[in-house]
Image 1: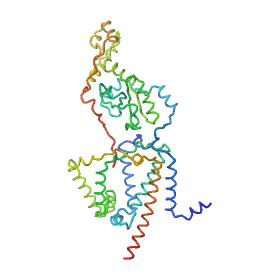
Image 2: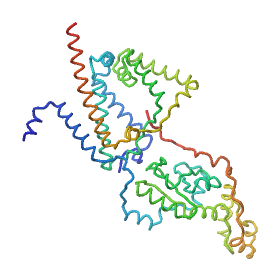
Image 3: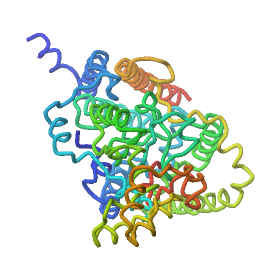
Image 4: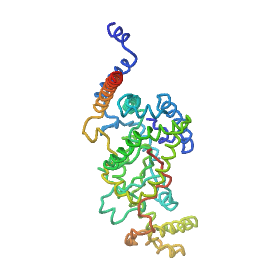
Length: 230
Length: 199
């Protein structure tokens, strides 16, 4: 009752000032608006995403995006700086797992992660998902898959006509990225033995020079960047 | 988590411009209602005889701060998506001084100049003209000042990061600072009024 009486006597300004002080005081105990390093996860939601495999981007799909010069996503290379220096997928940025949450990635961006195989990118995927990043994807199979499917694609044994057509397209993509399609022409003229060796034994050629495709490895064009600030 | 609306794609670039128009009109309206379309009232700030500018602006700042803080703590707003201007200490101090001198001399800041111009004051229009002239000159000499313009870069720092204080404590301190400033402003106004009467 006394508080109510005291409030009655106060001017509007004084009441607002008291309210501000109260809000400020509660804030001391209310925590960090940026969320700090601790997070909460919705385990069921994550499990569903993993189950439905909607968190994957196939190597061929990614190759298409790069060729189309799409800029609505960020491609993150999670390997070490040294490995990144030796070869990386054009337009990718090098961010290690430890630096991921401080790397300035935004929660509303589409993020595609890749590592050598699939383990690191899966871990990074979980980390980002748990921190509330909305659109995080993994390159299915990692860089190994990229090499197999994009840089050094091989025709399957005894290719069907459809497979040959598909391979002709993949060959172009592969050449774009400076790769070497494995035994493409010979296999298409269909000698079963050569086809077989192409799939199994053909040694991989050296990784393409980073200058290929022209300009592709430089900083990614930001496209329609949202204007900010005043 | 659903805000900022624009960043979460609730509306696109075009709609964001329409939203900006309405927010801009609202901002201008309240500046005008606070009396900020009048250069004399604004300049009085610097002679400590009328501290309305400080009171209105600081009130807006703490209201926004408390609102943004609680919205993000409650998980409605993702603060990491809210743009923070990067700090360039030396050029921003220089820029602040230039703006301050212009404010005292001309009686307006860029925003209030537009408010004043839209209410039909000639000094407001002159000021807006000067504003665009200044932008033009700055654009032309930018190459000469570019080095200074990007010097002492500190990145996107906030006070809690700089002072290594918890965010909540910083919110409290700014609230206390605002209340202190309000009290000091009222006291200063009374002092100045008494002095004027004495003269």
